[in-house]
Image (cartoon, rainbow, N blue to C red; front, side, top):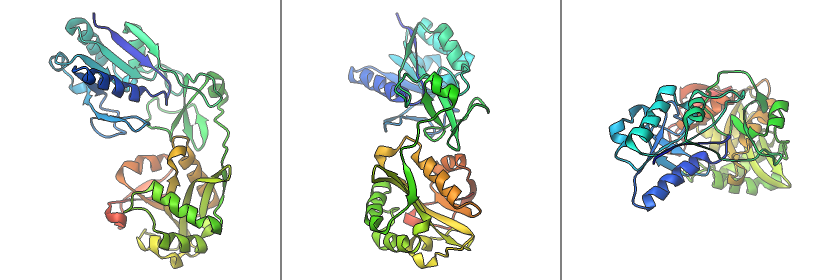
Length: 341
């Protein structure tokens, strides 16, 4: 007898990774499992789901799923199920009861204010099996609350649905959610030292593909000329990430900023950000956001300009940047958006 399973957990509890692995397990046994998500969930692109661990897989939209299609599969797996409507949960019930096809739905239970989402509400009411996918707060206790973060602080007002990942949300225990307390930063933010230039070159190689990474011949002179505009995050004596740029009175971004440190004018009213680097082992902890916040504070009164690829526009918008459209930059043979703050 098929069942409707609702497996809920806070942000970062590996729900999506679990969903992908369930599909893999079915396929390994020669069976068909279909991944499904709501169309509104588009952070990872159309008809694809992706976990923080790096796993990804194609999927279909729940809006496009018919009973005829569902009947062709041995299991239906739903990701981001909190965004389902009541009618869509009813569709899952029909798949289970009328087609005898099991449905496994993964999602958040409650929003950043502690209120149930519509999909979670009806899954909790109608599921045959309810299981918690557990994760922990920074303090070590079980995390059950999804905290929304803005400017390094927990916020408790705003629209219920605001798509975002590690840059916008973190999982907390009830105590630290109520107090609005995030993990104390263990990083020291400071300007780079000249003797750290080679280390910065190596970090750049790790963080960017070869066509985008700044070469040593450009990075070393930049650090020599604009060390006050090159901020690092230090973790117990090690550079975990950095953000850097040069100042100029020019208004628009051009590729020569990457290659010619002599353009730097310490009194320039605009700061052209040339890189935000976070080592892989430090990602998912909000370090990029903290580096940008620190940099913005240090450059207060100046206009910040950066370029980014299309899939990062949303992330920088959350950091307060405005998209100016496509940039004249063709660095690395890529198409870039130009953004300002």
